[in-house]
Length: 153
Image (cartoon, rainbow, N blue to C red; front, side, top):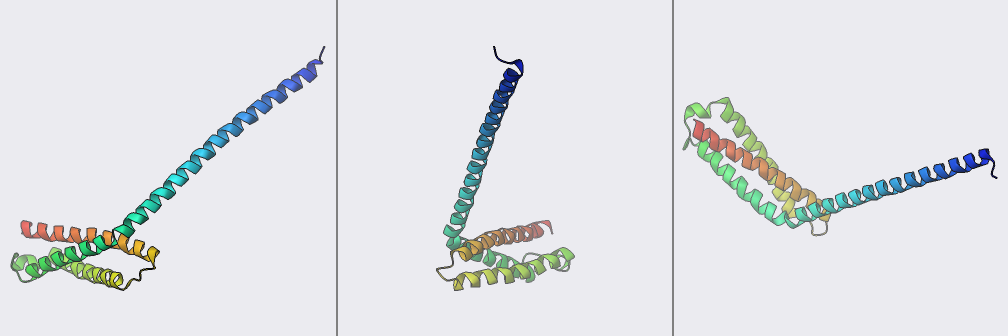
């Protein structure tokens, strides 16, 4: 007959081994899930970069077109074709006009950068395409604001 203390020790050892095995399995599952999520995030980031790289020419053309539209709207507003002197002297219009001039300078810098970028600088192209896309949204916002000003006044 086995000693009760030895039997208890063996039972405790078996329980501890089972607990450690369960913890190891749970840890492995958690690690696997983490590695999967990291891999998924890396693929998504690569896909987004590839998208920006593939959209560079389109973003350039879109930004150039939207800038022309914004400049035409600003010129029409300056010439009072679509607004009154009261509107032109308002702080809202002056602030908008200042933002138009600032963004025009920023967009011109991006367009010039695009025209001078070399074929081998993939990372720079991705960054430039992303900046162009963001600036395009800003230009669209200014066009919308100008259009709303015309409608309101």
